[in-house]
Length: 412
Ligand code: ADP
Ligand code: MG
Image 1 (cartoon, rainbow, N blue to C red):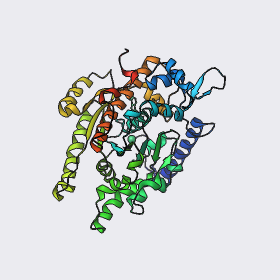
Image 2: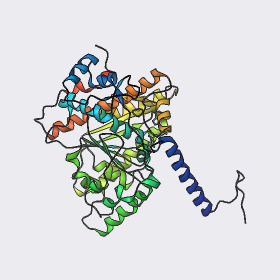
Image 3: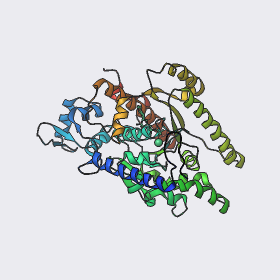
Image 4: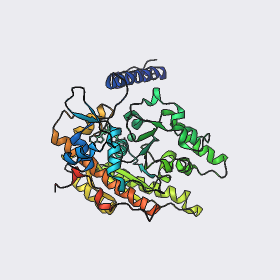
C-alpha cells in the first residue's frame, strides 16, 4: 500500500533511493567536468612579478636584479606577451631559496597536524586545505591525508571520492593491516608541494575493521595504526595535515594519536561551543581508558582553537567569543577567519581563497579573507618551527617572530 507523507511524497523504496543516489553521483560528475574543463583537471594559480616579490618579502627591483643571476626560474611571458608569469612550482623554488632559514632543518621530520571537531560544517576541511596550501606558499612540502569517508578534502583536489578514488588511494589497506606504511597511497596533486592520501566512502569500513582487529589481535593498538603508518614518510615531508570526519570515531582518534598538534576550528556560536565542550570531555574519557589506564601517555606539542566562520552580523558572537577565550585561553589563536563570500564562492568551484586567481567581487573583501588565512598559516608555521626546534635543538632556525608574512605586517 502506498503511504503519503506530510509533504505529499509517496512511500520511498530503497530502490528509489538507490537510483536517486546514482542520479546525484552523475550530477557530480557533470558539475565537476563543467567546472574543471577543458582539461577536467584542476590547475594551480600562476603568479606575476609583484605577487612573487610580495611572497618573497622583497621589492620588484631586487627581484629583477636577482633574476639576472640566472640560477632561479625566470618564469615565462603570458600568451599576450604583456607580463611575466611564474608557475606555482617556479614560485616555490624562489620561496624556498629566500626562506631557507625558516624551512625544516636537517635531522628534523614532518610535524603532523590534525584538524578536528565533532561537528560538520565548522570549517575543518577548508582549514585543512588552506593550511596545506598556505604552508606550501611559505616553501614547505606537505602531505595531506583525508580520513573523512565523505572525502570533501579529496574533492577540493579535483578528485571525486565515489568515481575516481580506489581503496588503494586511501588509508583503508593500512587500517585493514594489508600495508604497514602509508606510502602506497600517496599521490601527487595539481598543487605543487602537496601530496594527497585520498578518501572514499569505503573508508566507513575502518570503523568496523579497527574494533574487530582489536578483539582478534592481542597486541593490536587500534589507536596507533595511522601513527605507525606514517612513520616511514615523516622524513619526506615538512608537514602532514590530516582532515578528520565530523565525529570522534576510531579514525579520528587515530589521526589525533598520530599528531604533534591539533587545530580545532570553532565558530563562535553557542551550539558549536557546547559541541566542542562535549568533544573534549569524550576525548579525555577515551584517552583515559586507552592510554592512562595502560600506563601510557601522549603529549601534544600544540593545540590551537581557530575562530572560524566568524559572522560579523551575529550579535551573539561576542558573548560566545568570551566563553571561548575564558575556556581555552592561550590556546585560542589571535586571528579570526571571517564568514566570507570569498570562501563560499571559491568552494562553489571546489577551491579555496588560495585557488582564486582573480576575484570578481570586492577587492577589500578578498584581501580581508586572504589576510586572515595567511595570518592563521603563519601562526601555525611558528608552532611547527618550535616542534622542529625540539627535534633538533641545535638547528639554526631564524627567530620565531619573523615568520608573519609581509602582507599582514604593518608597512615599514
Ligand atoms: P567541515 O569540514 O567542518 O564540515 P567545511 O570546511 O567543509 O567544514 O565547511 C562547511 C561549509 O562552510 C563549506 O561549504 C565551506 O565552503 C563553508 N565555509 C567554510 N569556511 C567558511 C568561511 N570562512 N566563510 C564562508 N563559508 C565558509
Ligand atoms: Mg569536512
